[in-house]
Amino acid sequence: MLDLQRLRALHAVSVHGTVGAAAVALGYTSSAVSQQIAKLERETRTVLLEREGRGVRLTDAAHQLVATAQELLAIVERAETELEERRGVPSGRLTVAAFPSAARGLMPSVLADLAVRHPALDTRLTEVDPHLSVDLVAKGAVDLVVAHDWDIAPLPAPAGVDQAVVGDDLCDLLVPSGHPFAGRGAVRREELGGERWICQPPGRVCHEWLVRTLRAAGHEPEIVHQADENPTLVALVAAGLGIALIPRLGRGPLPEGVVEVPLDPVPVRHLYALWRTGAARRPAIAETVRTLRAHWPDVAAHRPPAPPPSPAARTRSAVPPSPAAARTPSSPI
Image (cartoon, rainbow, N blue to C red):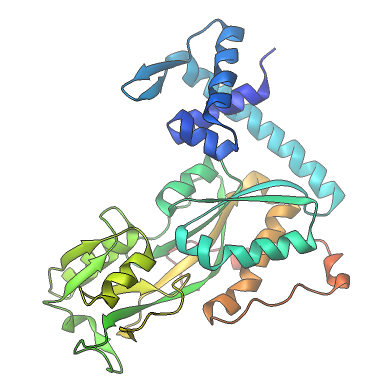
């Protein structure tokens, strides 16, 4: 009989691409994942992974097993959802993937709130960019995703994945204190020509937004410095090396030498929670989405998180987000 945990390990390698990445996602060591797959190879008398450069490649037989594993994992998820729904309280393990600034600026207070109110719920967070995380939830590699989009790149919601709006994150133009824009009430996009920009690398939504928006305003952006993390971008602005457009979520206090200037119109990115349709009835999903949305007003306004609800409120069952709360990324809020 095939072992489900070994099938889960093979499925994780298929989804994440490497044994190391699969191990991180599963919370195991790389050697433990390799051992699980080696045992599966012995059980099936089939080669499942082949070396390819520094990585591995799944054989045809492995791809067949991965398809079977995905079906079995979906059945297990339905069974676990039904049991949790019958108990009526959030419980079990819930894996969450969130993009970096949400993982830094939103998730700590949300996870702490859930831990206090629902001790039977074991929530595990992984930092993943939106262009990867949506596929992970669709394939069953994670249970819930916190992702974002911009007006130029609506967030795709694959078949079998539901979503709900968490909130809107405003973005500001950050300039050195000696810059001509410093002290302005607002700056229009048409005025941004000839600036030296500090931005995330190509392939990131923020990078694409900047390039496409400035080109639409008649300017070709000169991107002189690139970095993945927003705090690094802010530090480069503070050093007087250029200007940047950075969302407020997870940005933190601005250092000396950096001035925040509104851009007119204000760029907005939309935050979403996404989960598999089959898990929508799971109380852990419903309660986590509700908690994300409850914490967002304080996060967006840079206020301390609201205290956990009263003990009486803790006994109430979580309810899934109403249909009105869910929308396609391109429709208005």
